[in-house]
Image 1 (tube, rainbow, N blue to C red):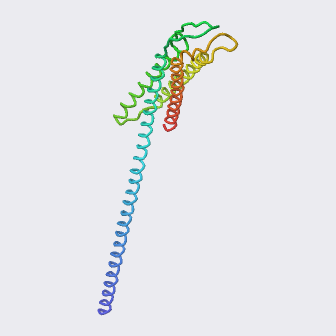
Image 2 (cartoon, rainbow, N blue to C red):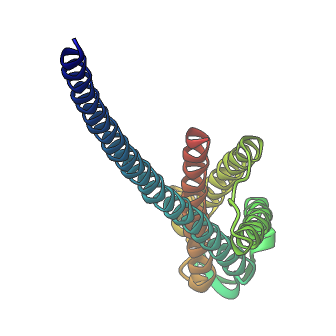
Image 3 (cartoon, rainbow, N blue to C red):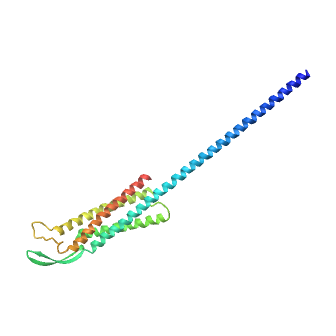
Length: 233
C-alpha cells in the first residue's frame, strides 16, 4: 500500500507538471496574440491617422485655390470697371460736320448723354464694390482664414454681385444704343454720322462699353464662385 501511494503521488506530480506546462504555453500564446493584436491596432490607428493627415492638406489647398481665384476675379473686376470709367470720362472732341452742304462745328462730350452718365455711375459703384471685396479677401487670406466665412456672408455677396451684374448690363445696353446712333446716324434724314468727324470720341465710348460688358461677365463669374461656396458649406 505504501508503494502504491508513492506511485500515485508521483503520477499526480507528473500530471501537475504537465498542466503547469500547458498553462504556461496557453499564457504565452495569449500574450503573443495580444501583442499581435495591439500591433495591428497600432498599425490601423497609424493608417487612420495618415488618412486624415492626407485628406486635410488637400482640402486646405483646394480652399486656398478657391480664395486666390476669388481675389483674382475681384482684381480684374476693379481694373475693368475703372478702365470703363476712364475711357468714358475722357470721351470729348471737337469737329466739323456737313449738313446739306453747310459745315457746322460740333463739340461732343460724354456728359451730354444721360446713358453715358449712367454708365459712369454704375461702373464707379462696381469698382468701389469690387475694391472693397478685394481688400476684405486679401486681409482674410493674410490671416489664413476663409474669404467667405459664413453662408450669410456668401448670400449677401451673391445678391450684390447679381444686382451689380444686371446694372452693368443695363448701362452697357443703354450706352450701346446711343453709341450706335452716333456711328450710323438716322437713315432717310439729314442726321449725320457723328463718328466720322468725332472718331476719337466714338472710339473712347466703344472701348468703355466693351469693358462695361466685360465687367458684367466678371461679376457673373464671381456669382458662380459664390454659389460654389454655398454648395460646399
